[in-house]
Structure formats: structure tokens, C-alpha cells
Length: 429
Ligand code: SF4
Image (cartoon, rainbow, N blue to C red; front, side, top):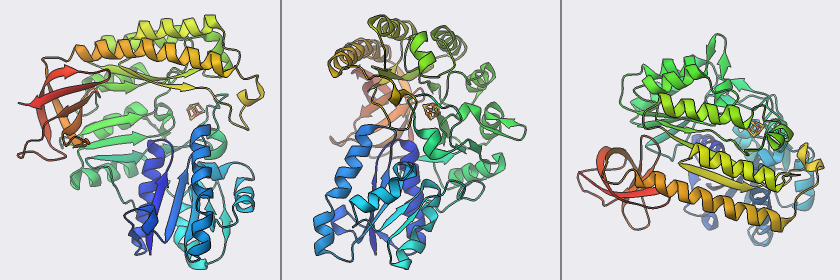
């Protein structure tokens, strides 16, 4: 049987698709070149953003006709969309041609339900398939390897569905994480990215996030260590110092702020102020030489006024983010903020356009500081123009001509000759 996995959402889901592929490979299934050549199509969904959910439902619906002519085709829907209350049943009602609906913690059961050969919905939150027990993983992101250090979230930001669909925080045993990383480094991976909804609140027994970083950092191989995502209320000065002194941890920190307005931060239940956030960024920049800080910004949260928006622009200018991922707020059913009155689309559009304009200017000036410098870059792949692409230690994307001496996974020195908004161009020296 040939399978094809369609993935929506964040890096966590990309890694989860690697686990689904691992489970299927172990059973002897092979990857199809495309969705058209597959006998089993798996949708690994995401419900965090409305657009990802709509796209997934649209793509599932589009298979109705194919299922009529290809009766043996199996369609499975997994991922956090399925964890929403009543979703599995209503999906099977609306799309009766969907065969299997599984919750995020039940992906290891996929082969079992395929063999069962009858429609099934199984969504359980307490079946922790990967806590302490590693699932087979078919990795596709060499030279990077994703490693979960924790699952779930306790924060209940008022706009976010994650705590409802992914459950409470559970940290993996540090020895288990270390074993997995040591194995991956032995396999030749050059970059490890630790994953969690809020890695800073990692805790297992006496080991907190700073302690875990310290334990990973003593591994002797040459490799890069990244992590995502951090919460500004939990990133400790101790962790900042470990990053500064580390041989492996990249000098790039992604610290989602969402808004610069204290009033909106409170409504979002983020549990920090703009002043605290700006102070943290200042501390990071003072302590870690060459660090780049990136962020997430959400525009148009319910009741956001022009003054609130100006507070956000002020914070963006003050923190000089190397890059920002900008989003327009859209309500998620079941969250606290979904009960609040939504802003009009025109206002949201005007504000996001202005925010992107301001941030692009800052990103460009950060990139310009690289011109003429020689940076160590890990070759991660090639772009559509056939050039190598990789990142500097502090996270800037660099494109440069291929050189037959080097391959994906090599560290090379690249002289930066030009910059674009958030990326660089150079050549190997
Ligand atoms: S920290 Fe907030 S935004 Fe992030 S996953 Fe948890 S609830 Fe969602």
C-alpha cells in the first residue's frame, strides 16, 4: 500500500507527520510520489488557525469524487482538528467517505484501524503514545531533526485552542530526550530543534529547561541546537546565560509577543506586560553577542484600538526584531476570545499592512548589517534556482552558489555580498 500525508500547520505537525510516516513504514507501507498515486491519504490537520482548518476541509471534500471511482482508497484524518469536541462524528457525518478519524495521541493505532477495514473514530487524550516511549519516526528534514521535549500547554491564552485540543503539559524524561538526541547525532544529524508549545516551562523532576539545555550542550559532536517556542513569561535569565555560554545553542531566539498593548495582553491572558517583554529582549541582546530575536505578532484582537495598535508599533521599533511572523486575529470556536466582538476586516487589513511595512524596514536594516561579513552556514537544501540555502547560527537565511566540494549537512563559511528583507546572498569562501 502506498501512502501520502498532507500536513497543515506548524513544525510540531511536520514532525508528527514524520511519526505517522514512521508508523506506516514499519508496517511495510511505502510513500507515494504524490496524492494521485496513493492508496491511503492521511490528512494531518491543524485547528490553530481558521485558514488551515478551511484548507484541510476543502481538500478532504475534494476527494469525494475520487473515492466513488476508487472504492479501495482509504482516507484518514488525524491532527489536532480532530480533538475538537464532537468533531470526529460530525466529520464522518459531513464526509461519510472518510474512513478513519484519529486523535493526536492515537496516531500509532493507524495501522490497526487500516487492518480493521471499517470506518472508525478514536480520539483519546490520555493515551500518551510518545511520552517516554519513542514512536518510529521517518525523518525528512535532514540535516535538522525535530525532538519533542514536551506536549500540551497550561497557559490558556484567550485566543488559543491548543490547551483544549492538546491537553495539559507533559514533559518527557530528560534521559529519554538525551538518548534520542545522541542517537540522531550518531546518525549524522547536524541540527536538533527541541519542540514544545512552551519549552521554557519544561520540567521533569528536578530538571527544568535550563538544566535540560545544559545536559544536551555537553554532547561532544559538532551540532546546532535550536528550540521553539518560548513564552516571554517563562524564559529565565539563567536560560539566557546558558545560551550565551553554550557551544551548540544557536544565538537566535523566537519570542512571541503578540501585541505591544498591556490592555490587550491582559485580554489575551499572556501574563506579562510590554515593559517586561522589552526588558527581556534588552537583556537577551546585552548578554548574547550577535543574537537575533524574532517574534509573532497578532493584529486585530477584539477591542484593539488605534492606541493599542500604536503601542504594538512602538514595541516593534524598540525591540528591532530580526523578523516577525504577523497574523490577523480570527476567532477559534471554543476559546474565550471567540465570545468577544470581532473587529471589522478593513481595520485589520489596514493595521496589518502598516505593521508589515514597519517590520520589513527593520528586517532589511538588520540584514544589511551582515554585508561583507563571513558567517558559518549549515547547508540545509537547495532553492528553486539551484543554489544552496542554509542559515547562519543566528537564524538568517542565506542563498549561495553550489560548490561540488560540499553537500547538504556541511558547515561552510559564506561571505555575505547582498541582503534582502529577511534573507542574505553570498558565496562560499
Ligand atoms: S502558550 Fe498560549 S498561544 Fe502558545 S500554545 Fe499555549 S495557549 Fe496557545
